[in-house]
Length: 425
Image (tube, rainbow, N blue to C red; front, side):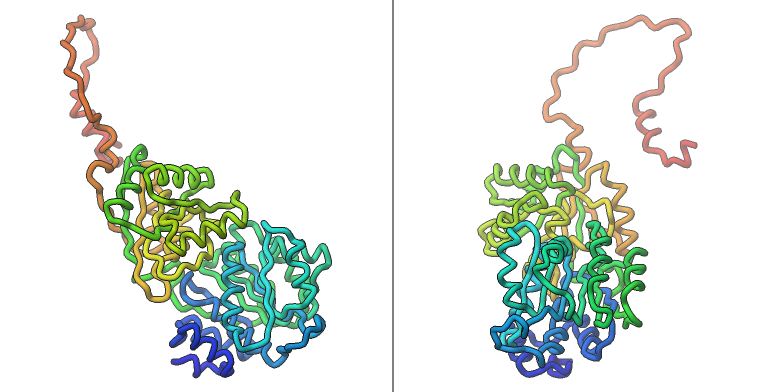
């Protein structure tokens, strides 16, 4: 199938040609015809499958007849609303829409928190047909009466599962309640916990359910390996891997914002240029770090799950789980940053002794066993052996009390702790 087979107007096809799009991805082939027919859509798709074009192109096609070059704000009401969980994802979605609208006079805008709301108001007053927003900032504008949702005819929820994880469910329900009853709804999610299923039933009308890949599947073109490591040597192992393998453009995930800062600091101390992005960074700091990473000025980007959600970095070769995620679905989201759009990638995980319990849940979710590779000098037992052993002190004879209980030899004790639980019982 080609894009010309999907019923898109020549202006859109010309923009896709300029962007180098050759043929639609499976999610695009499945969603675009259904959306153009006016059906509600509930789509399951992993990140990196091209879902942005899957909902953006039908929006542009359906709104194109109402496009106008008039300067009157009344000719440019908000007709399509796209909600995204993070600022980074919202920005990237709107950038894609601008590119697809190269030859169609539709206006778009992205509104998100972390920046002065007053900078967004003049553009809204001039009118935009397509609004991409994070839920919190959208409600700020609603409260300030700086926008109207009364003419919205299309609603998209992108990465709905992440919005649920981030606590946006009350905001989503409030926003949906502000929209016209008659509209088309498209909802995209990588995973479908019960809360997402309930949300879908509450506002989707006879949706067409589209699933292009097994739920929670990981891309076949992503090589997954895991290095067991002693907790005291974890940072050293990461730096060793970056140096010995000459890794460049590496996205590293940590479990906490503090951990991201500390790790980026240690990597920089080792002479490797790294930056951190997380929720405590300002929007300007996050955009700067991301731009430097994309340009190659920064080779290592350390991020938390929330900050990295939705990052679209073309041909990203490496993702590292410095901390194994407690939620196995986050593992799927993380490694979905690489191996996008058919490119190959590698996902490297570092696992300490106390993180082993998370591995079982991850492997159960993805339906495969991750290859484990020990790196000499960094394995879990490596830090337990001192680099230098002083000469043993002379043995001092001590009297043994009468009737003292006999002691097991040390080797037998060690063996006991290695026995399976069933045997010890």
